[in-house]
Image (cartoon, helix red, strand yellow):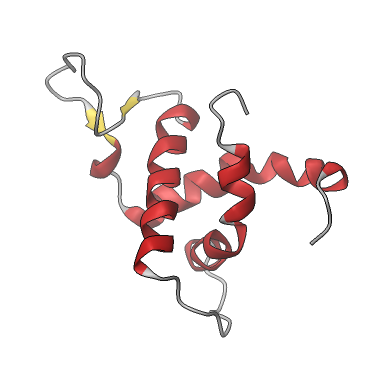
Length: 104
């Protein structure tokens, strides 16, 4: 919440769910494919959350401006489906906030 991503997570919940289901090995449902813009927003969100969620080894955002160690792991080095799985794990606690979010 401190990073201002709660609103993004709420808006992209439907888009992310299909990728989360796929990463979890669930069979695909008939889902409307995200537009290029929606997918781009989802990818930005995933890439913002993963470095915050992974404690060890440190994961650096791709736009990190300070010098990084020689063998540093950049967020784009992680397979997309693995990033989505990390996102799913990192956000599963948000379900407890459902009672406080407006319906619809």
